[in-house]
Image 1: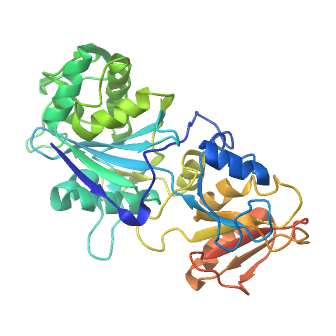
Image 2: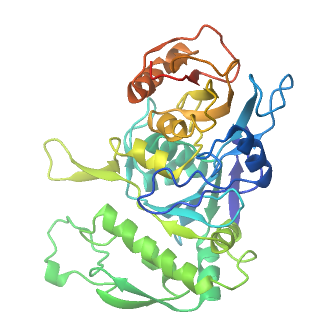
Image 3: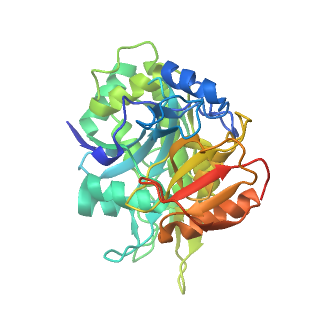
Length: 401
């Protein structure tokens, strides 16, 4: 059984993705669809030919090499998969960033014990608590707010689906990091660690359909959130390896379809940046998304993210006002790291713009525009022209500003 939520406001053509490698910065802008490459080649946007899908131009200007040409950018597909435990709760989540050609991508395992920030109507909660209280839609909303980007689709995958995939893969071996006990860490009276029952001992462990859901779901006594995420990652890594060459798409619901696309190309695993925060007047700590490093992480891994809610990421239009066709190449990641999204790209009304400028159209986008301007070493100011579907405009000129 699969419960899927599509979000028309962030619709995409097919399940695309970007080929992402560890510690890569600008290499992820290379080889979109043939049509996009042809269009962009005329402009020479060498860096962006990677993972941006470009959809046509304005009705008035259809020549990509002409002044005034503007084309919309389709968002990078980012799927959220809720992996359920045997009781229908959240065992963990997978964030899957796709490739433009529908093959390969990036997998980011996310622990159900990760805390997400509070909202006006809800306190700070673990993702597992969010899922139990509000289901898939609540998980998509709260995690998107916590990580700073949205998801183009969301799916819930049952324990039976996970077991079916495991059965297709056959038994796999993992290196269990530490003894895993289901006993609570704090009890009254306290449990002596030597007396705590152990469900899975450290060392080599065989995972198959009989224990995969339990192993993914168990919260080890004293196990950190990051260790649990890494443990789950290892399961998915060996499972994908075992499924290579097999017909996966018809097994495991939406997760099987995603795995089939990952196996069709290159894929990697990444860990979401997190930080552990001590709780006031308490011995407890919580693990939350790391707001300090998430902007650069997102810029490195998602070429064209979407907003988790309206206005989260100001829509940015990037225009080339120079004769250098590659002048706009470095701008995309800088926009994303500054908190925006690349909504459209194109040419200024002329190719002799003397200085680069950053302008905000929407007053709410001013902070993001100023961050971007500071990164570029230029000034930011209010826009003199207010195009639709843009909150911030960047015009690249021949000088810094």
